[in-house]
Length: 306
Image (tube, rainbow, N blue to C red; front, side, top):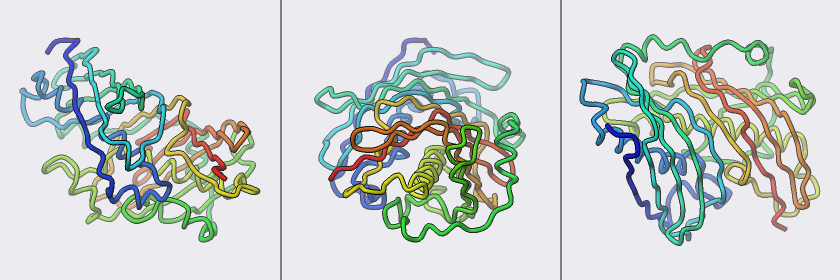
């Protein structure tokens, strides 16, 4: 249990991985990339002895960083270097902080990230009260809605096992505090979903990284519903915007016994570029009415590759 402890891990990117096809943009989904970046932190935390005190659950709490480039099936090996930078204990709970650097085997930068995890007794997770109330997010959650037609744009967005939205039930192109757009999505929780089985052994939880993808997928729909792709011959969404800072917070979890996930994204700025747009938003994810995830800033880039 020493600050400065480090681990180096490698991930060989399969050229035929299912998630490239399901993401539909030719790039590794951010959910997959972030899991590859975060999982060595769990190994290092356990190796340092933070889980020795009993039957504890390991959960990510915060993340902020920058994505430097997207990853394709031909990028070879990812190298993840994680360093324990701080830890603190409060009763039976332990909070650990890491600095994570992801590169290709060549040394080319992929991701820089600072992230925080906690070890919690199971009872503490049951009592989680979610994120603090914020009036503008609560108002967006409570807006009356009706299904928004998105069929014409769905084929260009994540599908298959990477699809994390069932429907959009509210969209206002001039909504939100900045007047740039407000959108809300919904997904029924499937207790048999693949990702519950893929989480930690005997700990079925939707990985928070998939919640991040749900929010990105919702923002992509807002961008297309606003018509920002008009005039583009080959529009492409980056995984998340490269070179733009991002931040997330988790204070709860989606488990198989829950019924519904609701997502809201509010566009806060739009920057027109030579070949597209950089759109920055903030947003939240609720499960059964409790706000458990928050992102902001969180950006997508729409680029014309034609």
